[in-house]
Length: 237
Image (cartoon, rainbow, N blue to C red):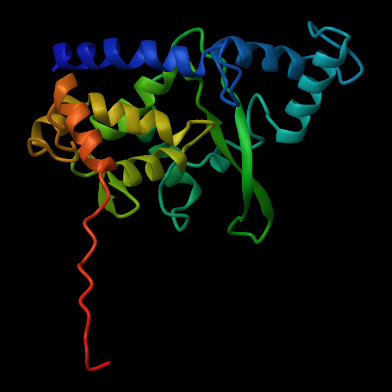
């Protein structure tokens, strides 16, 4: 199992870093960008922190403010866990560690407000999702798609090696800024899913290659006019 995971990682991670890395200029958040956001949030609103004073820095500060990103939600019970909203707060806290992928020591945790909810006492509060950094896409998807046990219910269904839509739905319930394309690519590299896939499924049949003479023959035949039907004289008319 460890060898299969390493093989999947070696295929998936280079593609992720190329597609969504710091030089890709996408809307995803890398570890470097997360640290930049954290430094901005820790600084005073009147201070620039480490941000440059130019227009690029102003656009970045405006983007962070418009998203409402935070270093920590006001209440840990507000974090989405992918479970049913009918669970009480204690159940959500117990399930948070079970559903989220383990963090590394240098991880910068960011949270994105995604909506509102009512608590048992009727008070309205924000609901947050954890921001998925690009470098951890593999661990996040692997924890949901491969390591989900039979008892783990993702929207009422077992999530282990489920399809692209259900895997994305389960991950999007817990994390923000993780593209559907990344999950689709992960499933292409999942050894178990590919092993179960019927041979040649979804692969169009290859057209036979023609030689130069054969291609010329086909082109000449396509240019020939269609034979016209003969015209007969009818004396009765």
